Image (tube, helix red, strand yellow):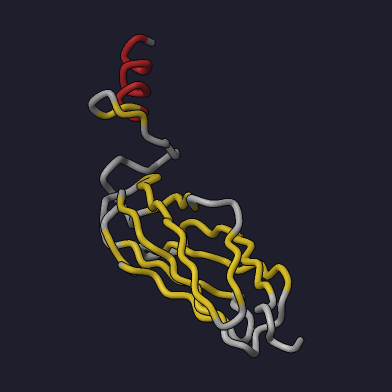
Length: 137
């Protein structure tokens, strides 16, 4: 029984750092599974404007292989870029949002995805587009 507890503790901790554990998965094996954290709860952007926010990518499990970021469910008139768009977790990237005059004002929820061989984490993130003053809307 004591040996089994030692093996379990070894699976859950590596060098005093607690890591997630899944049955059948050894630390350091398999594609990187990343966890995303966005610095702000929402981002407000003027029409015909830009804004940015920091996105933290942490290693949830697997090896620290390259993790790519992308955005989807992006509304018409909005462009989202990540700089850098790939890295080895943990790393921080800047998500830049550019909004054209054709974008609809209001709250839009975009999806931010981290991929490292297989989809690993998706965060729904609200972006508020506000009308530009004097835009005649």
